[in-house]
Image 1: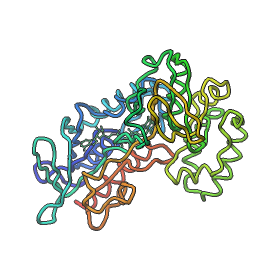
Image 2: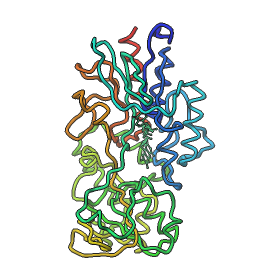
Image 3: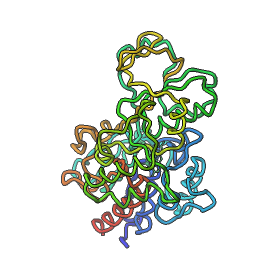
Image 4: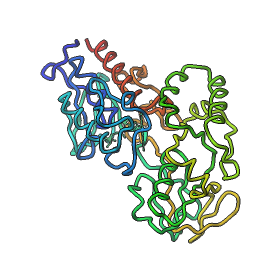
Length: 384
Ligand SMILES: Cc1cc2nc3c(=O)[nH]c(=O)nc-3n(C[C@H](O)[C@H](O)[C@H](O)COP(=O)(O)OP(=O)(O)OC[C@H]3O[C@@H](n4cnc5c(N)ncnc54)[C@H](O)[C@@H]3O)c2cc1C
């Protein structure tokens, strides 16, 4: 173990108290390295506390655990949102993690003598350490497209990040925009929760998979195929989808014309079916074309039609939001994603690790756990 006790050196600062940051801190402390987690909200697991009520992991309990603590069997195979929060709270206690809440890191700079990182944080703090782990989340800042006419829209418009449950939308006409896992699940939730009409606006037809087939989880397939050549996986997935899914072409969801793994590589993971297929097939969710613009009380779609929902819920994704924090360090690509990842750091930014900025087909929690161990091993080796 590396001897890096708090008395002898500054701790490793981990920015973000979500699963990624907590996993990194636990893996570091397992190697005798003192890590301090800085969390901007008033508790760990902030993003999970704010997710919609019906959310369950689409990755299995066993393949979603973080280093050093299994998720309790009693939480079931598909762990619910509240149990994810409970697990993360227990995780902090179990590993006795040093978490400081209410501290937001706004900028990271190199020290004047180029020996360490200086973290500018809430209350004028300047925290220094040769090693820092950035774990502020893939889903950091809700992304609302700048649709023409948006500002003058007279209906209700909200981002999916602010959707909790269908109660406020009972008896109302709702348009959900975007068909990632979140948009698909919110559309189903609205139908089951009594919305009068639910439409789903789609730009690119998604790949839809069963969460599990005969007990075999889609995630396990994702793990098996992730190192295989893209075209081979695309071909196999095409066959698998056509065998296991009904043809929804006449309901507005034709088979995608791009390969599943090709789309994953572009950043779009497949939609796991938790009711979308059935609600589309039975007409309870109507598929419409993408949103083009807004015109007072109307939404103008890409096919030229104009519809008048009372509410628009934009499940249009998130930005990483790393520009202010580290944009000046030359560590981001042109889409705002970190160039280094996990144990790898950039030559010009030694000791600055990033975790959780990819969207892998094998499950992000699983990858966060793997990255945490690798980061800890690298930090232990370089600081020994
Ligand atoms: C709806 C949804 C469902 C998902 N389901 C699954 C699933 O089933 N299986 C799976 O493997 N993955 C899933 N994921 C993906 C991923 O596992 C989660 O998003 C997970 O929470 C990512 O963990 P994280 O620690 O990287 O980020 P987050 O959980 O977002 O945590 C980041 C933390 O950093 C804090 N923070 C941000 N900026 C700062 C700052 N400047 N200073 C201090 N603190 C800061 C935030 O408050 C937050 O607590 C899902 C994601 C979403 C959005």
